Amino acid sequence: MGSGPSNPDPRVLHAMAQDLLGQFDPAFTVIMEETQAELRRLFQTRNRGTFPVSGTSRAGMEAAVVSLVEPGEVVLAVENGRFGRLFEEIARRAGAEVAVLRAPWGTPVDPVDVERALARRRAAVVTLVHGETSTGTLNPVAEIAAVAHRHDALVVVDAVSTLGGARLDVDGWDVDVCVAGCQKCLGCPSGLAPVTYSDGVARRMAKRGTLIRSNYLDLTQLERYWSPERLNHHTAPTTMVYGLREALRLVADEGLETRIRRHEAAGQAMAAGLRALGFLPFGPPPGPLKMPMLTPVLVPEGVDDLKGRARLLDEQGIEIMGAFGGLAGQVWRVGTMGYNARRAPVLRTLTALAAVLGPLPGGASIGEALLEADRYWETLAAAS
Image (cartoon, rainbow, N blue to C red; front, top):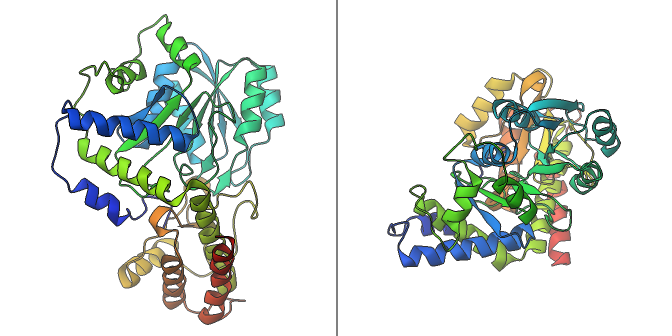
């Protein structure tokens, strides 16, 4: 019940238990095509370059940067958390000249600040995190993309934690490259990184003046691998593709809007229950710039960060996450993602926290906290 990985959906695990197919088996080609079609639907894009990179989410981020950015080009890394900082590191390793725009952790990035940064120094690419899981903050992607394009910069977006659980519209928001993950709201184990990029990005990569520094993460070769050409590039993790396809089918079966409302209800229920128990929130208030599937709270006074989370895991079998950087030891991150964005895991987690920590200053009883949380499921049921 942290910031990921989340528990996989049982249907995904069942799909992954099926017999192994070779990567060039005609039956697997059908699975690949279905996976790409469902990814386009979920990303809300018509991009031809849409497929999963074989590797975890970070492999997708690195593939996007190393394939798009040439050595010496300027990249503006927009940071307000750990994963914005990761983009900065990847860009430096790709040979880019990196300019950094930093906002305080837990504060959404202001598009006006991006405008000023690009006016001071022209950049070829802007990197941005949609849902910053180190703090539970959503950044205004559409507004920042519009600013970047006014300055002739391309936008690379990390939607690792938000795809399948929050509103994300690649074409509508005019995002050039978007990278996601399987192990968060999609309810699939980690191991593939869905990526989509525009035809303009594909043309830019094809006209590079320098060789892409990675063979394995070369998007121009990976697109040919996932195209009818079926370039023999690498051995695909076919079992992972089974799981991703099933996860995408689950989204289609539920309906994307219904799924987003479920994640919103689960996040609001968790936040309400934690507030009732006496936890103090961290990060942006509920609203359009708060991640619906992650609830950061301050570690209760007098509670040791590591020992408290260890007791929760050892005694109750529930894992939540600590924080990074300067927030380490001060913030806990409680997630409601994918298969865990349901009533039962929320109520169980609240009950477990109350059992391990006991009454907190200003906190209500566990019964009152569960009633507070339950109100949001009633709202979701009425909306459905």
